[in-house]
Amino acid sequence: MRSYGQYCSVAKALDAIGDRWTLLVVRELLLQGGCRYTDLLTGLPGISTNLLGDRLRQLEANGLVRRESAPPPVATTLYHLTDAGRELEAVIRALGRFGARYMADFSEDEEFRSHWLAFPVSELLKDTEPSGPPVVVEIRSGDRPAFIELSNGGMRTTSTAPRSPDLILTGAAPLVLGVLTGQLEVQAARQLGLETEGSTAPLKRLRYLGPLATGSAGAETTSPPGPALRGSKTSQEAQA
Picture 1 (tube, rainbow, N blue to C red):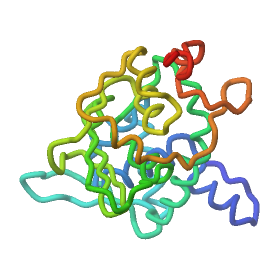
Picture 2 (cartoon, one colour; picture 1 turned 30 degrees about the horizontal axis):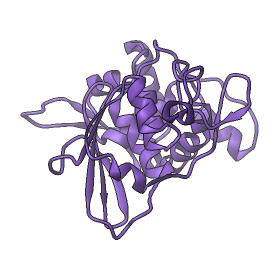
Picture 3 (cartoon, helix red, strand yellow; picture 1 turned 45 degrees about the horizontal axis):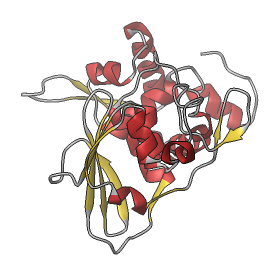
């Protein structure tokens, strides 16, 4: 990687992690923990095998990633973040929060993985009834189900069901995110293809803490993500 050649901590940080795909590799290792090479390829649609190998070598050289030879039955190499690498979690969370404003731009050829929900859920949503009963919401969008659990004022996303869900949301990621953030009414989302099973009452407990979405023109909007939704009926029109 070429260096910026500047005696500045920001420039030196970008010397280490500023290459394309590097921070997304870090994202996967934060979300998935120890990863096989194939796990990283699955979580990074669009990256080539050669480029992934190059980014991993750079991260290792900079002391941000380490390898582990896992014994049987795994019997493969696992990649982990080092202590220094885990310090980048704050950077990834800040980028996720900043980037939420651009989620209004969505094209059908964009990939989505369900485990990517973990950061926006924990960073951008708040349980407004922390003393309320535990709730589990199952999300069926992307490659596999994900589960959002509200309990004791906390909120977390897992890939395994803690128990039977109180609500199941099935549909395109922009519809799911629009409903979770309250930027799209459930009734309007159903008209656009979202399927719900169970009580939608848990959604009323969620409060969105992120920035307003910004479309291609740069204007702030309260519209939910996705071009299919912009130019559709608003929630008020759908309820009329």
